[in-house]
Image (cartoon, rainbow, N blue to C red; front, side, top):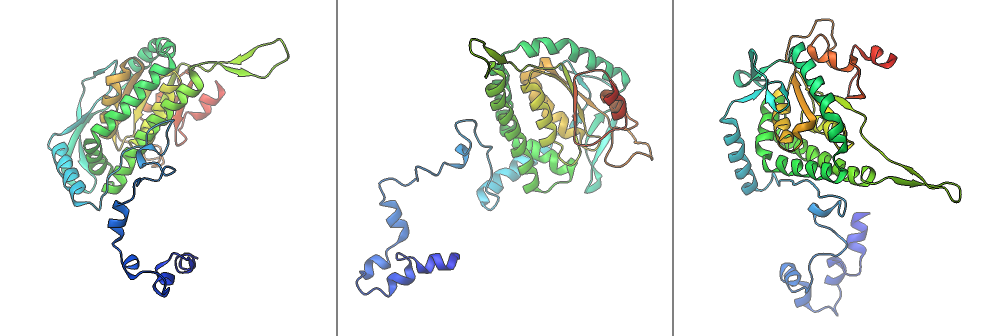
Length: 330
């Protein structure tokens, strides 16, 4: 079909080259010079990549991994980010809690240490829950427009520190460079998408159809505290998406990092806490899992398993966990 359209069109090179009426200078004209002579070059109906989702939100920034200049800048940024050892620890109320440090190694080369992590104990979980319960009402009362602006600024921070986030995703998560870039872009898109939803659905009550003379409205608001439990295979994008959705809706958040990738999660949380410090806590559970636990359920047998079983308003996870039946009975 493509060949038919290309060769069958009246303006195609194949047809014009056998048209004796067509001037030879026009047939062999330089296409770049012809394009430069056009009074208006961009097509008004084709937006730039940055504006694909306008007017609702900006698209995430990409990189041309086939461009040597982009690759050189990225290589320099990754090298700078990897010079400093990464660290992760429970973060409650904006403060990192002390504890025994556990070394974290590159999964592609177990001889290469990339950072340290402090696991959260039961006390850190209880402290995070108490702070979140206390912070939830004030965060819910924060106007939706302000919550949306905070998420958008967080997206900007992610893009400003793209190389640092990619370096951790590559080293700790064992991802390729294109996969790490896509991961950061998806996380940025999550932040901006939920910022847009906050403005559209939480800023003002929505009118409902009703009988004549009656005015019916529905207003959306936060439900309290959400536990966001991250998977290891998308340590930044899904981790960020769960948090962004809960924050946009006016909920306080306790974010539980995946056991295998706490360094990525800790870096993301530090950027988020610059803007939404009142409504977030992060716990890291890097402990040995019981042998009976399936590989996809790293929180079983760890302090993180306390989160879904505790009374609260919601939990976000991509997998099931052991205390789920208890939660469903509440």
